[in-house]
Image (cartoon, rainbow, N blue to C red; front, side, top):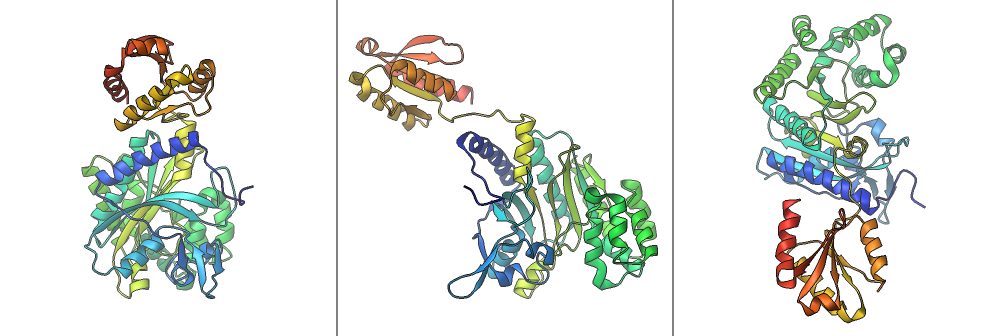
Length: 427
C-alpha cells in the first residue's frame, strides 16, 4: 500500500511522462536555461526563513528531527532551494538561467490532480532586475505549452506592487497586506461573495468594497485606468514593459492583466503570473518576481524571477486531450526464435540491433511462436523478426509488420540497415 497522497507510475504512463518532460526540457534548453538538481531534504532554518514560503505552506511541510536532533523538511517548492544555492555560491556568473524538474511535497488535501508528492518544472532567471527577464520567463512558458499542443490558455498578469499600492491607498494596515493578498487570490475558488466575507474579517467594510471593485476589471483598459488612479505607478509601468517585450516576440495574444491575481506565497515582490488552461482545467503554471528572498539567506538582495509548471496537471491534460500518442513499450523490434536451435542467432541479432541504438527485445520464457507473437502484439511492438532454421540456411529471416501482418524475407546482412532506415524514418 502506498503512503497516502503518493502513487506509482507504471511503464505505459512513465513513457508518456518522459515524452512530456523531454519536450519541456528541449524548450527550456532552447531558451538557454541550464539544468540544476538539489536535495529533497532542506534544513528547517532554510524552509522557514522569514520571506520564504510563509506560514500557510509551512503548515503543509513534511518535517522531522534527524538523529542529530536537527529539524529537517522535505522541500515544498523548488524556488527556496534555488535561493539557497545562489546564496551558497556567490561566484556564480549572473544572470543565472536555470531549470529544475524534481518532486516536491506538501501535506495538503488530496484530489485527482493534487497529490502530496508531485513533480514541478521550474525556470528562473537570477541576477537581472530588468522586466525583460520576466518577459523571457513568460515567453519560455508559452512556447513550452505550444510545443506540448496546448491551444486554449491565457497568461494572467499582475504585480504585487500594484496590490501594495492599492491597499496602501485604502489605508489598510501594513500587517494585513499579505493576509489581504491571500484572500484576493482565492477569488476563483470561493467567488466574490467568499472574498467579501473573508476580507470583512481583516479590513474595514469600506476598504472591502473598494478592493472588490478593484479586482473586477481586467485587460489593457483596466491597466491603463489604474495608471491614472494609483499614486505609485511603478507596478503598472513594469507590466506595460513586459507586455511590450512579449508583443515584440509575437507572444502577447495570450496575456491578460488581472488584478485579482495575487499568488499565495509570501516571497513575491513584483510582477506575478499564472497560466490558466481552458475552462474546467484551471491553473497549470504560476510564478513571479522575488527580489528579496535570496537576500534573506545570503544577506545581499539579488533580483530573481521564475515560473513553475505543475507537471501532474499538465500531463493529465495531455493524456485527456490525446496531445501525445501513448505507447505501451519503447521497444521497436521483437526477435523470435522458432525453437532452441536458433536461440544463439537471436541473441546475435538482438545485440546487433542494440549496437545501432535500435530498441530490441526477445523472449526470456522460451515460449511457443504463437505466444511470442501474442506478447509482441499486446506490447504494441511494431516490428517482429522471426528466426527459423529454414530461413537461416538462406542467410535470411522473416520481418513482420505487426500493424498489417505483412511478412518479407530479409537477408541477415541487410537487416540492421533496413530497420535503422525504417525506424528512424518513422520516428
